[in-house]
Image (cartoon, rainbow over all chains, first blue to last red; front, top):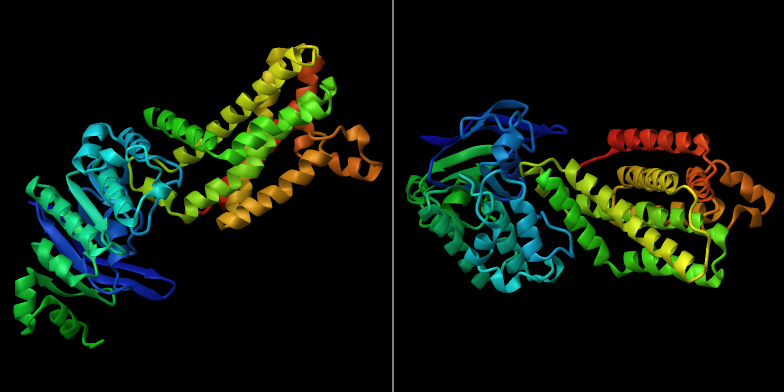
Length: 237
Length: 229
């Protein structure tokens, strides 16, 4: 069963092809990675998945529905952590979780989510006073408070220190164990290699390769995903 | 409805957590009242001033920061519409202004023996219209000015002259003729007028109609120009 189907997706901003014919599917329960450097089209693709951006061409189906037409209904079942999004500086952790919890018809109890993701001790702390890792953990918890079937995480670990990154990895592995479908956007190769069942390598708005990390490495005859990526990209930077 | 209630409650909590809002909407009008030794005619103007400080002084910066810091975008990825956050911000500003106004009115009656308002219903209607009107202007500022600092600055630059020229902070009688004429064209002037009418019990329809017109026009302009990102 496919949780996500993207076929021939195209999106142009002011003459630039942000996404130029992207096709992939994500199976239910799979952790799927979108890899590529900045400007490769990852975020545009993700925004099409959650209905924030309307594709110019192509079809997108998430849980069998069109996100551009059914954004709000789908948002009940799809959680998202957006790149660089934030909350009001003075909102407290518990308030944010309770408020987001009120947006969903069914869903997890926000107190349980707070404890589950280790945010209990921070309950009364203001968003503006949290560390980068704590903020990301809260944004991840907010993506999960509605008990989603699909979770989209855009650059979840960017800017985190190595310990916080490893902690976040464990949280994502826990999601997979619980059967949640995860779309992980990242430009860290170690991360996608450690977490993803399959990945799509994006460059200049197109899919350059798709498969399990080991398949992609084997396909390019390189030793690591990072080397494979540069081989596919055709630039050695 | 559950989401709107929750958003409004949160916005109100954030507003009361902001020392500047608390001071200018609660303590500052009381200080002016003490300086004026409880002059009875000043209270309706101060009520308009409290509303203007919230709706034009605070709201544009807050809304612009929600856009700039991608708070609105994050809400767009939930089942609710980000419009609800703006509605929550509006209701929170009106409620905060109401709290400031009630404190002021009670203090003026209890401490300074000001004669109680003659027509409480009309006063309440005038307050609601005046408060929503300044918020609609605040949304226009947040729609036109893109960044947080700019929106806060423009909000202040519009709000401060207006509270003086519209007769909110000082009576218009005290102004020179030329400045008083400017006041005739300012949207807060009918707000002060409607509040004064409610207080003295002289029902006048004209300021109420004007306020309603400004709310409709302001909301339409803000809705047409507002950018979510």
